[in-house]
Image (cartoon, rainbow, N blue to C red; front, side, top):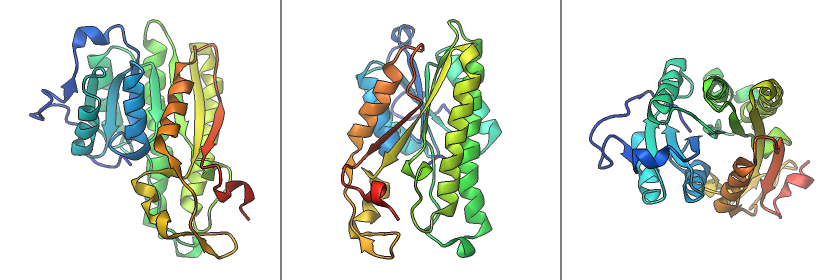
Length: 275
């Protein structure tokens, strides 16, 4: 989730000016920006990308979790921490200005930042909750994709890749998830449009739909989740590392190849039998 307000990339942090690694070494590396990089899927994916040799830009609402991710990646490559509010155009502009200044280019955006509303039937969902989910999951994803698109168009060599985190809710809803599900269906439209419009600039766009990865956000599932038939059932989860490996595979393809949509889910979760 990336919903804070700080754009500061300086200050004393124990990692210099929030950077780790050697500037000269970064020149030969591919550069990946991960939003929501302070925890869960974002952190796991950032670390997997670093292990695969990517230089990192870590964006998220709070500085401290981002610094923890950067520290975990220390020794694997370079990292730039940029606290960012993806719902604010000015904050996103500052993020991409920092990427341009630090690396001069961007090869991958993993558009991962997101938030879920409290579980509620449609008639009970507060307008403020709806707006928070839409502003973060949809508008935030668009603003980051737009920033990446502009940089990838201008850089030499031109092009790059955007991977959107869609969620299995982009395919099948859970009960009482109208805001989250609506935004994830919208992400599918965003992915298709970016993939089409990016062709002429060498920009590939794909989407990963993730089901029941074991992260902080799925801890509540240990006591059971509401099913479509009204039952409460404990659902299987999978290792978040399996998600990270899939993103790295998508990112490793040449720009002449693209995986537009892929689903990675716990094998026994009830997605295929929902309803």
